[in-house]
Image (cartoon, rainbow, N blue to C red; front, side):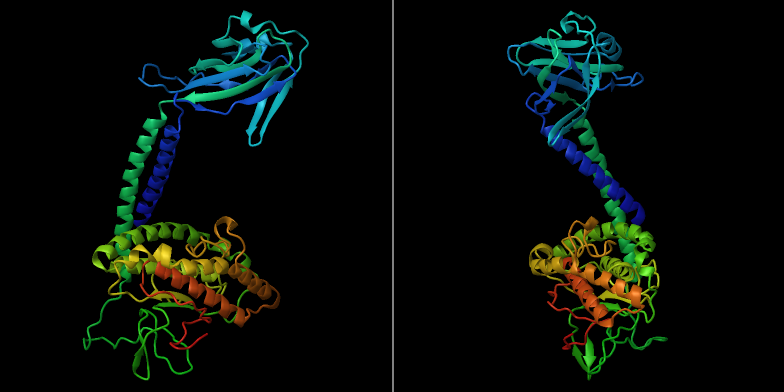
Length: 491
């Protein structure tokens, strides 16, 4: 359901986008119903300007009598020399070629608008052109002083537009503009909006249902104290002594820990760990992004589902004060999968072990989890993601390279943002430096790794907050090292 829903949702979103664009374009038509280009000056030393071959297609079979205008072309021309008449016409290509045989004329090859530039193909000839007004083969034509206009409904065939001085003399200098009118854009826009809306809605429903199903599989099963075959539930972060790090036992969510029997809250109710392999390949990091492509493809779909389910969760929080438990564990699973891939491929390079294809917690060297909140503020859901998180987002823009990387940690761009458009990031530079040192020395510098882990930990805490998973405001801390710090320990 998740895969099918993601495909349908993305197709529907594309159709909605296209339909919206067409609707805007349709509304932008001029008062006369035409999309019209700006008038530009075309100048040649020859006797005529001709268009490239307008091959409408003999097998097109343009329908007639359908009750609306499929396409209408309007061309306007005026002579730069106001005392000279201009001619503009359209005719079958073969007739135009015969008419201008052995006449020097210029065929348009390319027109660029910004800046305006025209490229012509010069067709040599020595004959003097006969007056175009004396020819009888024109399908549409206009001649005279001032602005002249022709309106033509395309029909099957090979056509050519010709602009000349009315007497056929050389040195043509004219102002030209073109416009097109069609009644198709409105129906197409409506069809795309309706069809895209239906597909998107079906896709969203399937995505939510699939996420709930997967989330149920990830939801920890409560144990009955004293039941047969049960063991006491260990603290989520394990036990902490005065010097040791917090080490989470596998399969338990982060929660309060205890020191000397007293409950102590963690620095933040998330757990991000990453343990550096004792031995790493010197050159494998150069192609890890390539090896991780299957993960990127799957994570693209999972992050679409993540966005959909986050919106659903926002409404649930707004009306009930609770984050739906199944959706919560699904979204945490997406973040967990993203962290494993980024730890392997581009944001830490901390292990050569290929990431597993699962949302669940495993014995992989990198792990992520969030403590489930029993209650969430209804009001904060309206301002957390875009207003309250601004200070963090500004700082993360410097650390991880822009507005996109922190929001999409699964993107394999080394922390430089989508397509590298967000500039070079501190995290990206540090990871590359670590990789180069590894390439030449075979060692990953531990202080550098600890700092990289601190940046990633900050990123995922902010994502947790902006994704509405917790209400606690993320600390402005760079907690370095492979594991979460013990409460009260600054590192």
